[in-house]
Image 1 (cartoon, one colour):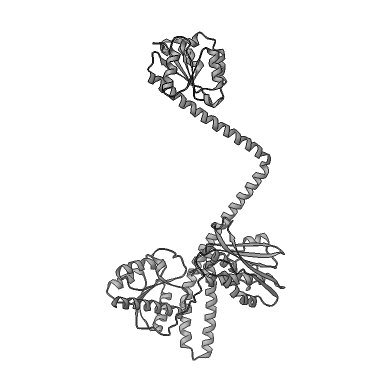
Image 2: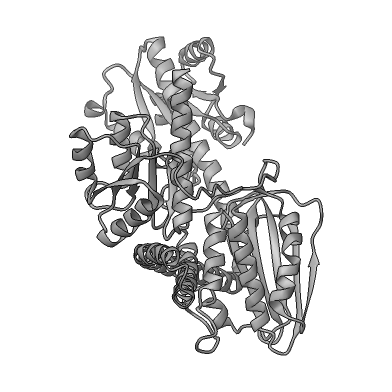
Length: 553
């Protein structure tokens, strides 16, 4: 079919002036037409291409319609060629048997009684052309479909391999989903357990701190208290590992030079591994900074190094490298990362062990030789920082653990974090302490009273609000975060609406406060030592006094 014929009108009206009139009317409407002298010319025009045909009734009644009927019935599946049949006046279907016969033969036909109004003819022609254009669109879709079928037919030659590949990808995706769901469940469990342990450890460590000061002149008692504090400290470290796996630890991320951090750890790692293990560190000096909590990252790297040492009981080599890499894994967002690799020449792991390596409490070490939380902690830390932990291992070929950390656009923060260490409070102050756990509240109150503060206790947020509304004057509020009915952040919001300048310290067993009003509050993580509590209280009171002095000035 010629493209320039696709929307023309073929006119078959051999008698009278119907052909000339119809052609002129169509021309004024911008529709091209070709006048056919007989059925043969019409068939030739149909083969060349057309958008519609206008035919008079008498032209068909006197002609052999076998060829036209055959052309109509042999149209391709996308085509239903439109005809406009010009009939005599009063030649409707109800009184014209010939018209009924022509309707059956032509199929897609519209009857127009003569004499006709030019607008009616143009309207019918345009309607027919719109329908024909839709048929052309259907033809294009069919051509595209056939091409796709051909492509599919060719692809089916390797169908078995493709199905196997897709099945494998599906199975891997399902396995990853199940693993993610399992880890999420474990994370929720460990986070809850860690919170409960922190609540228990807070009064234990606080009371041991007080005992150590009171028994300073009793060497034997001091040793016992110091041993208990060390054990409680190790328990607190285990809780931090649980929180790291659950991604609920209270991180203090900042832009850190990974090159400087790794170089600063070189001696500590070598001492931790012992003389039988050689340590190679390949650290480029031009590594970009990463946004991390340096203390937690050092602990994570030390965990990886100790794991590697335990996998090389007869000695071996530990290699630590770092480079800039672009993420190509669906586990993390696209972008640039600093990749820290820790590789050993140890015994390696089989696929089953590797699949469970980051599960909390899962360990292949002997009883008393491992907690099963080291890799869990590293995994949780990396995820909480927006990166990932990737582990590769083969039995007899060693293990490589990679920590991926997002690159920071900020310059590395090199300022030192100096701790305030006041022995006594800078001034007398009254503190409202809010905690629903009596043991924690009592232990915290004892620590603050020992420092020299006056403490008013409240067992709930609602009780604290009642005390404030009753008119008591306090210089600072210390509140637990997780409490029934109203948590510490909600309490802080209500207090700030009453006394916007009153400083508030939020104590939390784990970090779930990353945005909203709670993100702006000063925080102290459980379990804490008395000196940590003293530092926070002094800093808040000093800041409050400075603000008041500025307002008075």
